[in-house]
Amino acid sequence: MSTKRIDLNSDLGESFGPWSMGDDSSMLSIVTSANVACGGHASDPETMFKTLTLAAENNVVVGAHPGFNDKEGFGRRLIPMSPIEIGRMCTAQIGALMAMSKLTGSEVSYVKPHGALGNLAARDRAVADAIVAVVQSIDKELAMLAISGTQSEQAARAAGMPVFSEIFADRGYLSTGQLVPRDQKGAMIHDAKEAADRLLDYLQTGLMPVVDGDPIKLDAQSICVHGDSEHAVAMAKEIRTRLTESGFEVASFI
Image 1 (cartoon, helix red, strand yellow):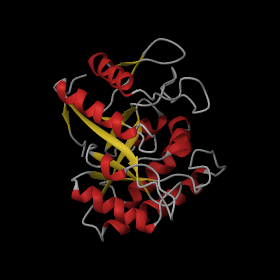
Image 2 (cartoon, one colour):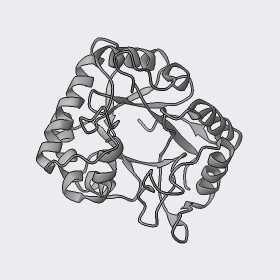
Image 3 (cartoon, helix red, strand yellow):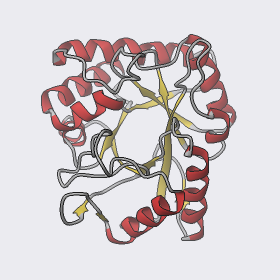
Image 4 (tube, helix red, strand yellow):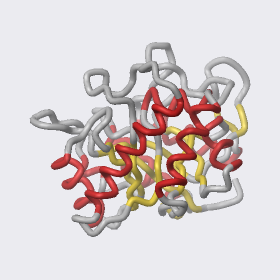
């Protein structure tokens, strides 16, 4: 890797109503970028407001995290929709978070699709193009945080928009560069030390281990730790500590 600077991001603001998900307060004291749910797979107006306020207090950069309108499935089920419908769905969610940010002193700086939507855009160029198009129509200054080596990354680069690539601390990889589906063996990494060891090896070599072949080359400016895991805070702390000890500056890509 050519840089010693790396971002640490997490998917946050995923509670809604009386239902609580994750420890956003603790995570926002560790990460440098927050992908904030905006009413599709999770969140509601009060949760958005609270998460954006906490992010501003911790000087954490904020991104919109749109997903399928599927709170029951937490946005991890594929909902049949055309690319243009997906684009309009993302527009509504991004717009909601941007409007709420005006009340909190924060600013939405990038977009990262969530869950099944993110995985679909990673492999389907038409969906990736549709999301890129609506993001650019909302604000050409918005960046895209895309899974490294996927159609999402390529679509954003082809459109000339700011794009940053991410890898996942707690997810297994396929040789295609896509994530191992959550219902398959090797999908999740739960041990913080194992996750940190893999990341540091990757940052030294640029090669990511996969479950179905030889390691693949990926580029990344950001590392994601999922905020909904019961091990999320411990893993984020371990990773940030190990990165700092190894001489990396942990800072947002924005």
